[in-house]
Amino acid sequence: MSELKATLTSAMKEAMKAKEKERLAVIRSMLAAIKQVEVDKQTTLEDDADVLPILDKMLKQRRDSHQQYLDADRPELA
Image 1 (tube, rainbow, N blue to C red):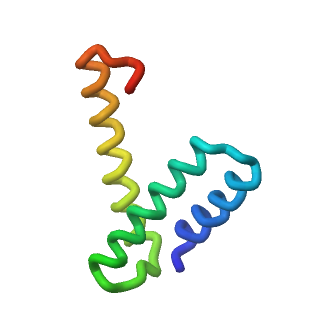
Image 2 (cartoon, rainbow, N blue to C red):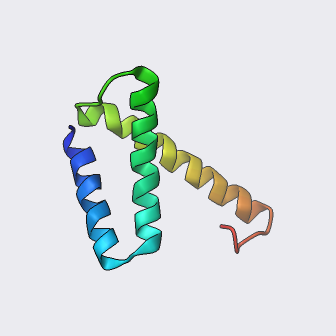
């Protein structure tokens, strides 16, 4: 298991204990994206270099969505 995945798993446990729902949802979505790539490739991502592009892609998607909501004058969704 990559160090980054282990850190995310640990952070998920901490968020559960602290009952931080929003933080927990974000961490779970990151872990789900990593797991989806592992299932698609039928392998386990052992290196942080394999995990980082997945998280970078998610970050780019979120930034694009945020900007689109702002452009559409929907700040409640942004």
